[in-house]
Image: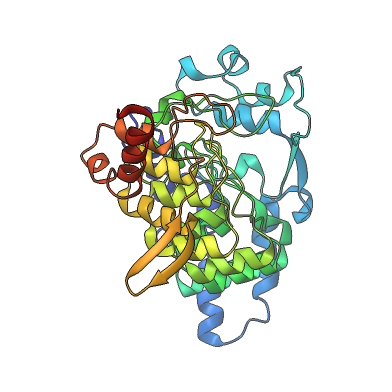
Amino acid sequence: MGNAESNVTSGVKKQTDSGSLKIYSLVDLKGGGELVTLMKEANKARDFTNVDTQIRELVLPFLYNNGDGKMVPIQELVLTRNKDRPKHKQLPQNRESDSKSSVKSSAIHIEKEEGVPQFREVCWDLDQRGSVGETVLHLCLLVSTPIHAELAKRLVRMFPKLINDVYQSDEYYGENVLHMAIVNEDPVMVKFLLDHGANYNERAIGSFFTPEDQKNSRTDSLSHEWVDLSLKTDYKGYVYWGEYPLPFAACLGQEECYRLLLAKGADPDLQDTNGNTVLHILVIQNKLEIFDLVYECGASLDIKNRQGLTPLTLAAKLAMKDIYFHILKLQREIYWELGNITCAAYPLDDVDTIDSNTGEINKLSVLNLVVYGEKIDHLDMLSGLLADLLNAKWNKFVKF
């Protein structure tokens, strides 16, 4: 989607070819597959006596350790993912050899980052994934018919560790079935997955979920699983929804899913690769209708992203005037009201050009970002508080 170096087209072509890989004999994107046929026949006969046994026989050959999974080094996963990149963007270990076996067997000595996981538990055999690194559970959520939903639930009950497998291709890396259920606007499935241990802190960090102007800057490192991105970005992306399931739900206006995730312990202040929280993402996507819900449920307006911007200053930079004025209202302190007249005080920490702590110029202040902004909407943002602030500064420091 706008990325010249994307491999999604070939991946989708392979995915729609049910005969290209063994996994598609179980479930394909056309609504067929042996597992789907079993479910349809059982539904028709209203007899599920032998279904689980048959499903187990068909699926077990695709799983590690009979469904108990195994721990796979992050380095191996990163190297495998990195092979999807153009040659000039591949890691040295991949450029030296094109064989998958060499990725697993080569000795790699990388300094480990403190506190960063070095292994991921994987249930579905990495060598028997779909064309974009998906499992049969992902395929069920992708097709998303009632039959596929029931099949997905049976698979989760039968093989609990399958629930946290993620897409392995560079395009969709990190997406899990919880992300997919939210996109499907299916709170019933979201609750089922959460009740059965789905990871609500999984990060969808594939190229598909990255801002458009950062896609060419994506860089892998063997010391961590996430992808490094350039600092400079305008955050525009078709599916840049903050990586975690919680901002996915917020961006899609899925209030019930959002509350379900919160109840399980999801944190709205977790920051994605760009340092953005749920509130930052709502500013970027201009989702004013759900902003109050997220704020009232505990999200902070004080966290700064990698560019040093809070949700308020981000709104100022992007000229999102409606959500900008709304955040100002949320932050003000009302002293008194009389009819339609309100007396209120606004915190100036992020607004004024003078840093209240150091006395230096704050180039990331609202006033500075709006005055030097290049969009037409920046002019509209000069009214109200900013106009009053400029007038007060003129009278105090400039006017004779």
